[in-house]
Amino acid sequence: MGARTFVVVGGTSGLGLAVARLLAHDHRVAVLGDVADEVATVSGELGCTGLVCDTSAYEQVRDSFARVVDRYGAIDGVATCASVWAGGDLADLTPAHIRRAVEVNALGTTYVCKEALHQLRRQGYGNLVYVGAMAVVKPRPGIPVYRATKSYGTSLIESLAEAQHSNRIKVMQLHPGPMPTRLQERAGAEFLDEVYAQPEQVATEVVRLLQLAPDDLYVSGERVLRADGRW
Image (cartoon, rainbow, N blue to C red; front, side):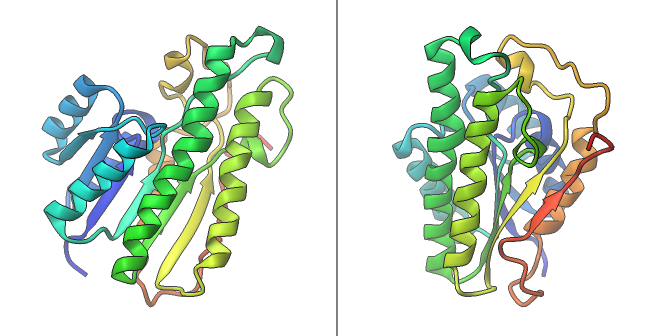
């Protein structure tokens, strides 16, 4: 199908960056991140478009998607990888930390899906891939807030997938197991898992879903699980 245009939300580190790297070789990529220096570094390294965007602010999400469309005319796929870690006992989490996790993991995911699907419906095709977490499949008592916010995203995606009524617009989700990224570091926590996959390993699956063609088999609503030996 030749070079296509993809948006990677949360593409400045971890899984999002790994996805952007794989796509940038052959396609047009727009990376969205909330730290200006990181966005500039990644866009310079990959030779892609970089946009500073706090997904918890709807106007920033709306304007970022509008800029991508203005520049490239269409969007073939959107990967929403942005997430805030909120691990630990509920009693130990500050109200500010809880609020930020909800703002990014729930509100941010909603805003991204809203703008992504607005564009995909307008053009009549495209793929939306939500990166969830294996934590939503089985309760983990040590991360109640993180799991709750990621479960919100899963519920949202499942409903949106059923609402498309067309295979030309595919809404999918992928639930990775633990990965050693900056997710915990950004929240001042440590990565403690002993069984995990590297972001580069999981990124290949995200890219596969992003590149599905409009006439490929009906997979909207598909849930891809990567347990990576844990469960």
